[in-house]
Amino acid sequence: PITKQSLSTISWLKSFRTLISADSRRLNLENLCSSVSKKEILITIMKPSYIIYNLLLHLGTGLGFPIILYKLSTTAKYQISLKERLGFLPQKIRSTWKPGDWVWLHAVSVGEVMAVVPIVRELKKVSPHLKILLSTVTVTGYRTAQEKIPWADQLIFFPFDYPWSVKRVIDFVQPKLFLAMETELWPNFFLYL
Image (cartoon, rainbow, N blue to C red; front, side):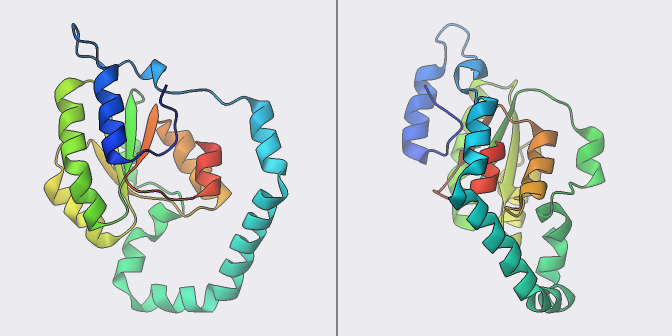
């Protein structure tokens, strides 16, 4: 079975085709996701590597804060995405959000966005009931997604990997399935997913 881990585009498409029922052509998301017990989450949280990662992440942010502040004050592209990257989704998304069968596709930048176009098109064709959330990291990826993937139901900037920011977004979105277009390691994101 497919789990919530990221998959490559080719292997995912092969697996996706086998999950589609020939008679209804409807995707059963319950078979796609495996549950993680609270015990497994606690074990993961207590791992020294996870604790060290978060300490270094926050320490690095603290040490780099003057540079971050300078970049924010002088570069428009960082100002555009900051709130969403910190886990504060825009009001237009929060006010229109409807829970349901959300599939979260993550494409870092322009190349990955272009690679996800046929996947989104196929998902909408075979399972129109699915809602597609597409996330990007870069402003150029975001703009490309707006232009090339009008079928996506929502578009956001991917949150920074702080425990509080990813938890806020994941708790709100509650995706049935997450697919990353490339291998990325975001320990906090995948823990809360």
